Length: 265
Image (cartoon, rainbow, N blue to C red):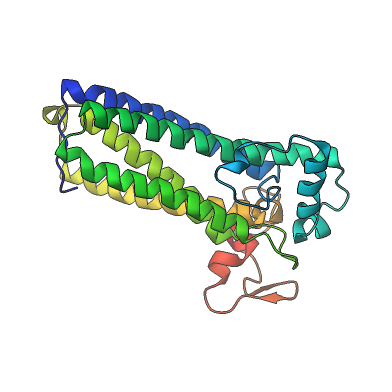
């Protein structure tokens, strides 16, 4: 980064504020995992940043929300057996996931205003703060775009695994950037060391880890984990026999590397 952040006594509250944000983002990622595992992500079919903070309060409102869920493919092809009680369960996790995102926004905005009044932000903090704000806003937008990909009445009963991967990786990016920002405000520059060899290896490690995380999101989005319930082989072989098709679906070009459940597994 071109901006050189430096620790100071006045910046310590800002760093603590950022670390609280780091912890809240970790919780949000965990809530996202629970939301996916419980199949709750498409239970709320509308995006109401303010009014959506409250869940349905009366039986009539619950039935209206349930009726909207019944219009999408996930209900028609996967969850047509759901009762209102079942719907309330998946609704809770998606609602709580969104509520926690709203709380993160509040924890960001209120101290931000207080710190402006107290003049705790130095010039070297402005650029990282703008980047952090844009990343957070982008994450919220990507989250809704991801949900929209599953709100249809066709046979697609889950969200796009590509958009799920972007949503997941961007969340980790926001987490890492916030942590980096906080540490820059807490740790003096003299305590940092640079090793070219270690730096190179870390670059490769981060790259490989990112690819693994992306494919982990693909696994989740395509439900690829159940495609091969054997280990360490894949249904008795080390490489799927037919990577160009599965059932009636064909995978032209290199699309099998990103869309074929067995290959991704």
